[in-house]
Image 1 (cartoon, rainbow, N blue to C red):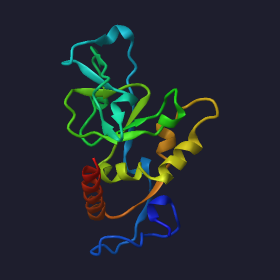
Image 2 (image 1 turned 120 degrees about the vertical axis):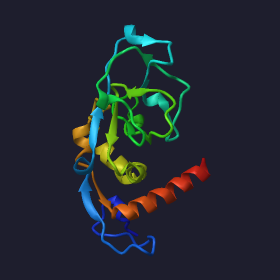
Image 3 (image 1 turned 60 degrees about the vertical axis):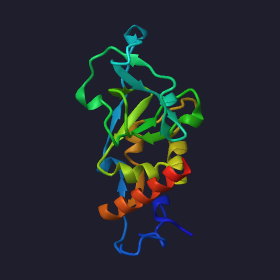
Image 4 (image 1 turned 90 degrees about the vertical axis):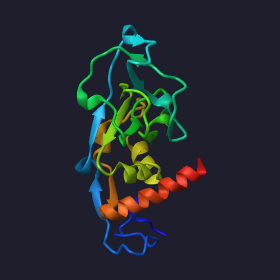
Length: 188
């Protein structure tokens, strides 16, 4: 069966919470959120001081969760928008390994003041609790694989802004996100 978030022509999935009847609407990610490119730093900016700025990198995402086993802290001043915020989605956009492109997680309970490195991007929108679930679908990875260059393992925000998904009302998004987050927590 066809499911709306996978880009089919239907306008609502068959399986849904009974209180919701509205059609889902196709939207590009760029219409509802923004991408923030990562920070470039040099080896001389790196410090052992955990009170400085953590630079989130692909190694900080393990099994779709934040991990802090391999941290890099820098002593730099960055623009306010580059600070990682609660509910941002951290995405690997460049990497030596093609399989890591698109890897992502939602930022929750960040124990450090943080930003993200040049090989990463942040997607910021009011709907990230729902969107992070879309970023786990086959459709998302189909988009990623279609945008990867033949020789360069990278994508960029302008590519991802064009990705289309079907979205329910905000109330239904919240209900779905809460349900799927509870399932994820149980699995963890």
